[in-house]
Length: 301
Image (cartoon, rainbow, N blue to C red):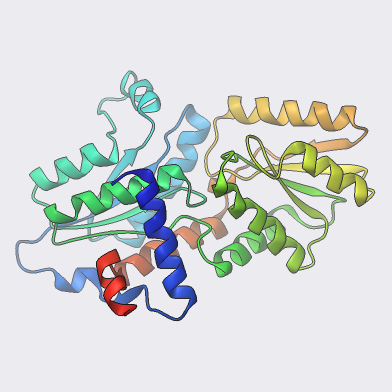
């Protein structure tokens, strides 16, 4: 199954739900456990470049371990470069999701519950879905929680967390998103629209590598006669070096355009309210099993 088929599966599930077709069934995965079965909670991250990003990853991992104290815990990273970088300084090597699922099978685990720290349904999230789907034949149960922004309610909860964490008394708050330069960026456009729908007119969205771009953001700031802006990284965990570099670049360009600029160094992984959303997603995955594409096709008849 390639990435385009994975995307099609996601769109099919969304479409069926939108027209009233159920996409999941209530079924607690841990209630199916029998004597001798083993369960494990898995956290999946892009990876950490430095101690700053590692702290946010550690907070995420601790939150999942606290939510499921009776089960074993493992983590996987998706960026091999960061895995290799980590392996040079750590006593044990962190693996990719595929490698971890293979090891979990060898270790006799039967029930696997996975949650990633992805922000949107990006390409990395799609490949993780593929890894989980491929591993299904090896476990009695394996399920995956959704990324941060998955439902309209998630967007609302996220912007509420932003407003409470950073305040709304500034002339303009700009959420700096990574961006993908693909159709996936429509999720960031939805974030921007949700802000406006909730009359948070002093909040704006821009992406580093996609849309809305910094140039489109400048047009919005100009039309709204904004003079002061506050930059906020909208990423889960970011290295202090790369975050500082992007903030410096945007600060310089906005200052050259005539704006007074301030910035935040905290990322989403620093906010408890954001962690609440991720925990809600893994608990939902625990309680509800998504229908397969074949099952949804039969239901849709």
